[in-house]
Length: 130
Image (cartoon, rainbow, N blue to C red; front, side, top):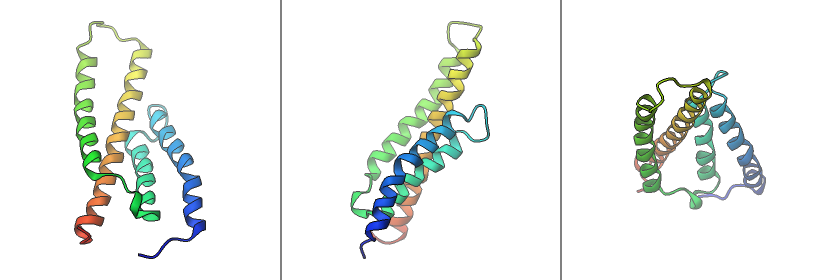
C-alpha cells in the first residue's frame, strides 16, 4: 500500500478534534434542533473511518468495538426502563431533558460503533484482507 502524503496525514490529524466536537455537538443538541444520535453518530464514525484510510496500521480493534456496541445496546434498553420505573412519579422538566440528552448520547455512540464495524467488515472480510 502506498503511503499517504504528509499534507493529508497532518490535515486529517488537525481535523479530528473538530469532527469529534461537531459530532458531539449534534448529539447533545439533538433534542432541540435537527440532528441527534443517528446523525451525530455518523459524524463520529467518520473519525474512525478516516483514521483507517490515512494510517491503516493504527486501526481500532474490531473485537473491542463489537463488545462496546453490545454494552451500548444493553444500556439503551435498560436506561429507559429505569427512567420509566423510577421512584418519583412526576418527572421534572430537567429530568426529561437529561433523559433526552443521555439517550441521544447512547444512540450516537451505538451508531458510531455500528457504522465503524460495518466499514471494517467491508474492508477486512469483503475486501479479502483477512
